[in-house]
Length: 119
Image: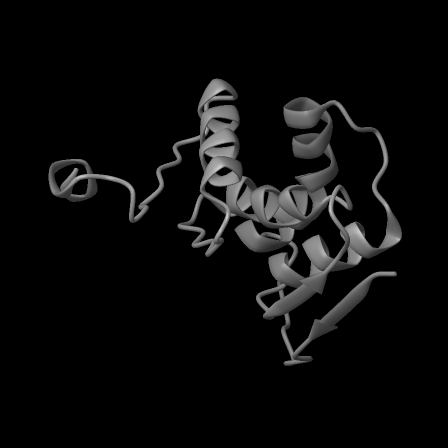
């Protein structure tokens, strides 16, 4: 079961808007970065809602594709994306994977020493 909730705030975008262009190109980003030609409907809705500037709460089971839903808009918009997770090993794996794909990514964790957190 998937739950996608969002705040429906009116957003009007011109055709030349960088945000409008990023919304049109997100499937290309998904294809080039992860090799997927299609998304599940809930992933599509979550990504498009995020790209339109609205907040999203996405609840999916393990392996349901949540990571793709928060990483894709960040790549398309080239903006800071803050993800909070209690799973340190998952965070490390995702940061490493993003870096391998040329995406700037870092993590802060309680397990890091003060010097590492300050970088």
